Amino acid sequence: MSESPQNIHLPDSIVKWVNVGIFVVDRGMKITLWNNFMANHSGRGADTVIGRNLFDCFPELPKTWLSKKIQSVFILKNFAFTSWEQRPYLFHFPHNRPITGSVDFMLQNCTFMPVKNETGEIDSVCITLFDATDTGISQTELKNAMDRLSEDSNRDGLTGIYNRRYLEQHLLTEFDRSKRYGGHFSFMLFDLDHFKKVNDTYGHLAGDAVLCAVSQHINSLLRTVDVLGRYGGEEFGVILPSTNLEGAIVVAEKLKQIVAQTPVMHKETAIPITVSIGVTEFKAETPNYEHLIHCADLALYFSKENGRNRVTRYTDELESKNNLRPTLFT
Amino acid sequence: MSVRPLTEDQRDAMQEITNIAMGQAGSLLATLLGVFVNLSVPRINVLALSDVADAIGSMVGRNIEITAVRQSFHGYLRGEAIVIYGRDGCKELGDLMGYDEVLDRTDEIELLLDVSNILVGACLGGIIDQIKGITEAHGAGELSFSAPSLMAENVPAEVLINPDKLTWTHALLMEVNFTLEGRNFISHLCMLMPGGSIEKMRNILDEFVASF
Image 1 (cartoon, rainbow over the protein chains, first blue to last red):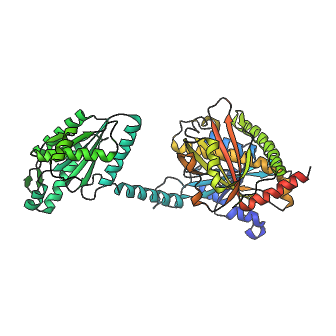
Image 2 (cartoon, rainbow over the protein chains, first blue to last red):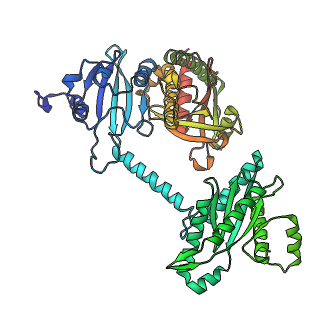
Image 3 (cartoon, helix red, strand yellow):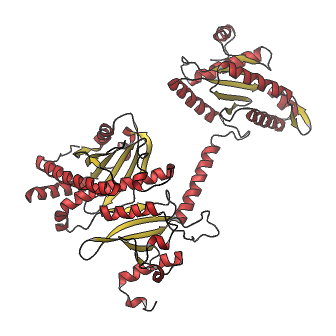
């Protein structure tokens, strides 16, 4: 700094001191201007880079891509841009949040501008570099929060498994996909037997513990593609993709058996639990996803009716049997 | 509200300007990308807002999913350019733009933004070049561009422009299709200029006609 800022022409002074990176390269990628922002963040003063090739000075730059980008400005005589959202940074600059930041380098938004010389020829490209670290960090935090929120809105507050809203939404998706592309899937509803008695005998806290334990246990037995959700109260639903009725019955029998063999421990009391299950499968003629819920529910009703701790598959005969009993389902 | 279409002279002038501009744009793009770029003859129309979605639908095809990038330009004329790609629009472009590696989704978006910026810049730059004499006489400086941004990803073409959410009533729409020789790539460029810019454009075209 031999000259005082007052003696420098005003625009030069602004370029020099503005809190934005500004540098210029010529057609041979030689650096011809390098402002203080660039010098401070790169640790390379103007005197050490001016007249030198950009890529020799900064080997970390993505050479092929960046040359093409700068080339496009020369050829099209037009602006070009980069955004931190796709390319977090060009230069490996430290950022101003060494303590509170969650990124490795300063996030950067760049604009590439054609620069004309006195004869109107474009002989250089000017690149401005904006520090987008703060924006980037807050946007990332916002996105993470939104993702968590949308995950939470799919979960049942007590058991942590999916809630009824998500279960139905997923059932609709699976239904639409199978309707369109064909394929199997099955749906089951199960219910903890005599759950009211559990609440009455051991208290509601014990009842809650049973709901959590059974749902977690069953979730651990299912495949990752299966979707288990709490349908309401002590009733749960499971979507079994790519599974026909026979396969679903096997799964249901296994679940029924394991639950019956594994009493839930609550404060050193073993609480015996059994489940009743109704199973149905998607068929090409299934009119809508609600029909699958109806079928599984009806099969579940007959599991209860026939003594509980059992699995019932939905068949058309259940409908006619159902018509003989007093109307429970309207 | 009735929309006054361009007069026949205005339309001819616009066609003339855009044809030359697209020719220039095509050869610039060929230099930059190293492949021959085919540009369609531009279609130009003044449209009511309610008809724009339809016009876009008939250009790119109905019942297909598209990805679109938007970029605004401002100066004497102002408006927005929308570049529309089919579902796998960018799969073929990576090597053209200097990407060595296999592209992930973020790279693909960057690539679409890059290519959009280039297409818009080349076409609009060409048009501006043709009318520079006229706009400069009106004291206009050079056009500047905002950074391009992703507008929609894999949405049906007909929902791209939602008339219910917009405030303008009619716009000058210019459409061009791009294909690349030897590659399975097509994209569509729509330039839309609302209200005041249409009137400015009419005046420019009238002066352009008068200058011959």
